[in-house]
Length: 99
Image (cartoon, rainbow, N blue to C red):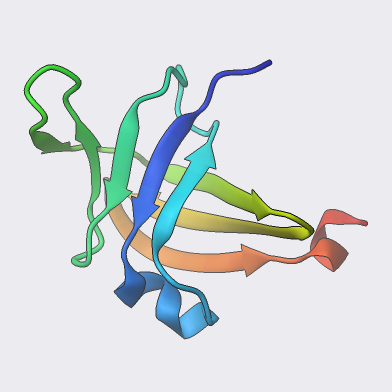
């Protein structure tokens, strides 16, 4: 079983895609180890310090894939970042995955 991180995405960012903000899983970070991330309403990628609970900016450049599964409802999204700022977010559907 592979480790993953959690990423919380705000309602404001997912509403245009017809989804609500939630906590998703991701394996897109360099060393996934049950860390907690969030994409803030002002489009910043942040990581929570496991000891202090404080949030700090993550300077990530590239795509972060995240997903959730509830019963038969599998949802996968990709968020594109430039220097830690969200520039685009979209849902990947089954047709795009080749299923």
